[in-house]
Image (cartoon, rainbow, N blue to C red; front, top):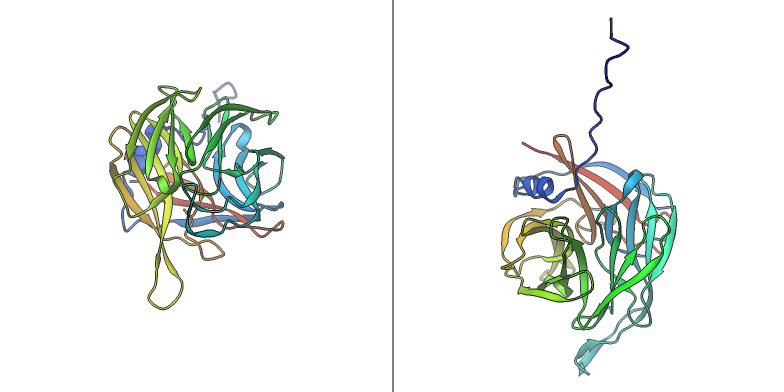
Length: 301
């Protein structure tokens, strides 16, 4: 007979801390297989997803760029830019595991309309928005996860493609266009450190977590094929923040419904028991249902 006074079994919440995620990513290899555990359509136009992070109460936050006018390449650089700024709107959507829209807020101004990878530090959402071209400019915002009130934190004279807050130091770590540079800021925008990314295989699109001198990033690179089309190489890596060196990396070959590598853009990682779980939103969606929230898992040793 069970004891009615016995304490209930402890319920383990998923762990997305840096220590847990770094330990798990270090176990990944070329032979790692990601199993698709769930695929649900967003019931809102997801546009061009860029970042995803988990908040409290199992809410997910997705940053996305609504492209109104695509950028166009110049024949020759103009004022230091290789393309026109284009036009668009930046959004942060609140959703859940069923892909339902629970809220939305717009970020950016003028030609600064392209949000990047985002992070939730336990109190605040950190959202960078930039011009949709390299060597441009950015605005980093704080967003209240409950009210979605948007507050400008600072501006920076380069394209910030993803940002994550170090839970231990309180500092912000960011990547520029194509993750060619790694940046460290105070929360009011003082640049403390800059390092060149020593890897040239994968352009990391979003940082997932940071702490203890390391951050985990995911992304892709596209390589032209001899006849037509491109080959997309997905990847996930542990990066040394001080030196910019990749300490561990593994390819990711799982594909989305549209045929994109799942690390194409928006990714969040967490540990749940003995599995590493990935939330990903790689596909664009001009209408509700076009883009999907994918849940993938791989077992840990």
